[in-house]
Image (cartoon, rainbow, N blue to C red; front, side, top):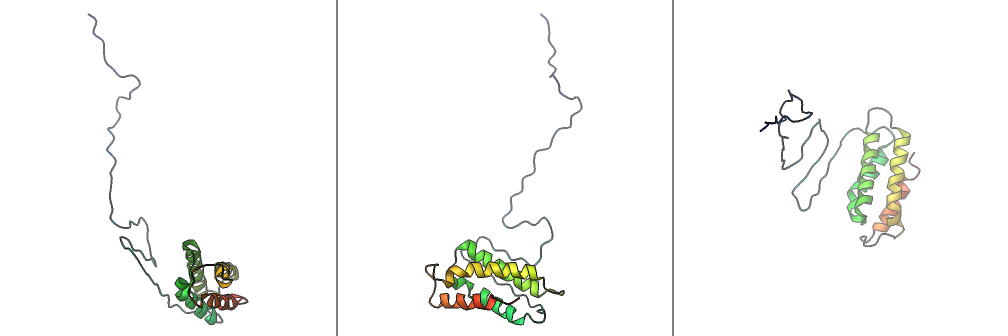
Length: 151
């Protein structure tokens, strides 16, 4: 009988054993970098979060700050679909952040954010959005008027 050698083909001789992958299960958010100014909620049925930035507003933009702050407060009553509401909230916060910066507000950033706000509010103002609260159409029209010609 001939004995055969059972050497595997093409296997490196000094290959280190690989360690099994490490698996971590988290019951909440995990941050892998610095985070500031953010709000998070999890494992909740309904959440209502507010964040207030009391920075100084650039001179001449006080009326816009008041208008946008009011818009953010009234936005939940507008009856907007989820993505439209998120877009409006994001644009409103961008306006407030831009006019509260220590340097002069950037006109292009403000114009784009204001255009988003007016675009999202237009269906409410024209009555296209169904299920809005009484007076919401009128409120949206006034908000659009206030946002028009600000810059």
